Image 1: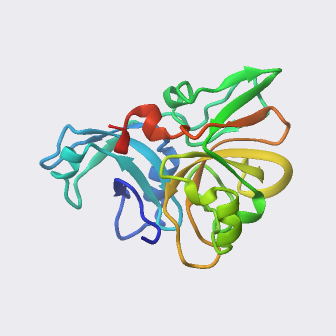
Image 2: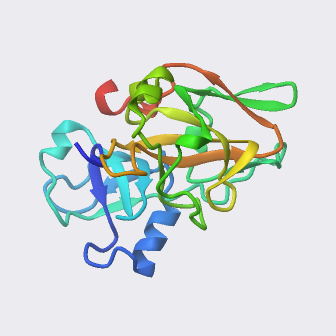
Length: 235
C-alpha cells in the first residue's frame, strides 16, 4: 500500500488539517504517550502513540485488535501528552523530539565513553532522505526515505525496515528542522509505509539528534517499538 499508516490515524479536526488546533495536537503528542478512547463503543480502551505523519498531519496510534473492532470514525481519543521539551542535562549536545520519557528509558540506550549509544534496526545514508527535507520544525511530522533506487535500497538492507523500527539517519541534522550536515546523526521511528511517488518512501519521525558526536548507534534487528512495548504484532 501507499503511505499506509499502521493502527489508528487521528487528527484534531478532519477538515482543517493545517489549523492551529491540529498543529498543536501533532506537536504536543509524543511517541510512547498513552492514548485513551473517551467516546463510543471502545470507550476506556488504551493505546500508544507510535508516530506523526506530516503533510496529512496525522497522529498515529496502536490499539489492541479487539478495541479496533469497536472503533469508528469520529470517536474521540485523549492523549496524555508528555515529553516535548525533554532535555538530557548530562548530554546537552543531544536534542530530543517527540519522545515520551518512559519510552526513552526502555530503548536500551547505553553510556559509553561520554556518549549515548542507541540500538537501531538499520542505518540510512543522508542521500536517501527526501520529502520533508527542509521542514522548519521536527517537533511534529516525519520525512521520507526515498526508495526509487531499489537496487541500492536492497543492497543496504533498507527494504527490510518495518513499522516501528528505530533507524539511524546518517549525516542528518534534525535539531531545528531537517537538513544535511556531515557528521550529524538522527534517530527516528518508521511511521508509515513506502510510496511510489518520486522523493517519497517510508516516513521517519525524529526522536533524537546530535551534531557533536555525543550520539552513536549500534545495529540491533530487534530495535522496534512494538517489541519494546509489546504492542502491534508483538502483543
